[in-house]
Image (cartoon, rainbow over all chains, first blue to last red; front, top):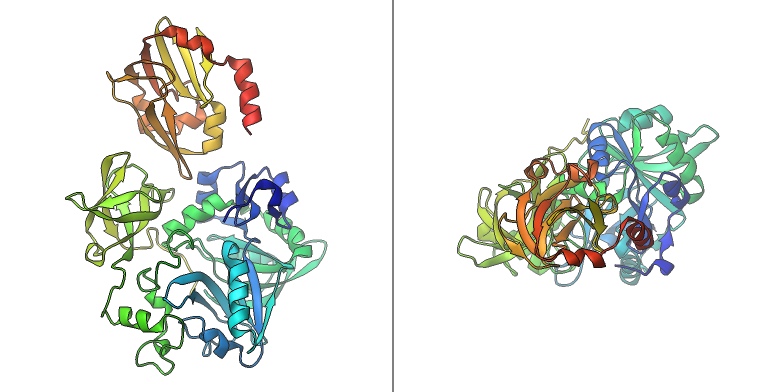
Length: 381
Length: 124
């Protein structure tokens, strides 16, 4: 999604980004910081070694309220919502009737509601979709008054527990309400121990009125630097995490996208609540290995030469036949090698398979490798 | 020795009929950390505006155009080994290639430093 500069929305931290010297670019309809003066490479490495603060307030936040909310949400997602314990977070996928992915999202059972975070570029469509399909079964409440920060990196927990004692007790994919001491006042937040970098860290939902005080308090900690969306992209790619719009979209099913792990057994064939989500017939058949409807699978690729391979680069087999194209690719700053995600026919998806990426007319040899490209560092307790 | 600039944010430093070409400070700043360069073949003849080299950062790739007709005499092997030179010293150690100019008069139409500085400021 793009918008002309005069229609760009601004995030509540816009003034702070400008003060910090950010380079602002249009992203998902918002003016967002792509990098700060330190630059993408330094920001990426800082997040892997210390703690980085990301403003992701362009993302959509909403909550579902009502006794039927979990069962209603299960009609839109192929995942187990009903049995998710209070305080636990889960990854989910909004699907269309063909099993294509409308968006990927994170949701938490907060007891009183189900709190959902969706992609910024998809949020208007997602909220309309959710409202239209399950709005009669539960209250669908958008939360435009909330900003969203992510604090990511191996030192994120020591930083945040200094200002919000107790957060260190959370494990990966759990959340809770906390009070953060920002100096002048205490800020109420809802946070989860999760993120989009492959590192330990937190995503922090906070009222827009409080986000500047919170961001300044975090940036005042010696371990913390501001990190732009450029490094967010290179960090998530090294972590093997798909980006909606690049690596997954309505033309890909969860199975083709390598996200079958996100479908709990209870929703699969033979499970107590098997199917019952959009595209279930196709997706369950793909899981059983009966069909590869579109004949594609998402893989990780690493180049054997030090030539970056970017999105839309064509992939060929040794005989020059087109196999597909790269959906995301760059030189991974941590791994210092060109890495990519791509869709290829299943017979080329086996680890170790050699594939040629056609870069400026020349074949760059790549190998199918396991993801994540860089080991993840989640805190599982 | 004179330095000229193109609208594609390349600089050309000349001595006699030999031109040294690189990317400007503005160009390296817009690209960010350079991680890869693809340099032209020594001995190959190019027409002005042909793609002669590629420069890539983590987030973007950009073509470097041959600013004028000529034959490539030398490329900066040090830049191939350490692409970050394009960021740290774009007008010096981060040069890209040297060309023997076929028609040095092509330089006359190019921007001088004052014009380029104004051009780059407006390009922002």
